Image 1 (cartoon, helix red, strand yellow):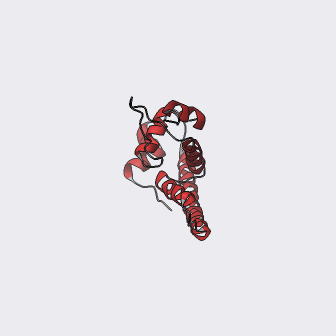
Image 2 (spheres, one colour):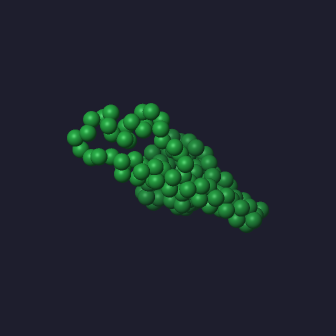
Image 3 (cartoon, one colour):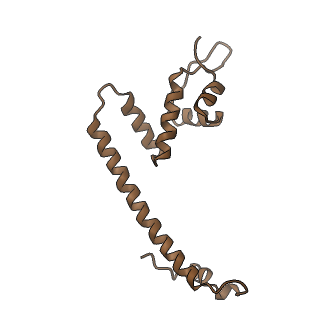
Length: 139
């Protein structure tokens, strides 16, 4: 039986063996056939799939979204319009998260500016008191 072992796949993909197992468990890569002795023998293309998964993660896609992307990339009836919409939806999601992070940063900067520094008892620390009393307004 031809193919690559899990360690060869991991090395070729620059991930650890547990990552390969995890992707298999999550259905991102297919379960490979086994040899008579029980070894899994992966097709070489799995390396490309794992590299695809890692690149997609790097730009913010979740594993569930990546599963859809992989499906689309392996589909003979590929629809570029769907990918365009998929990407635009992700951009909107990222923009929303950026807005939330800016608000969080602003709140933390406000609290940090009120902090008198070292030597202050906990009940006079604006960060602790605001978090304890729920006085932080989320903007």
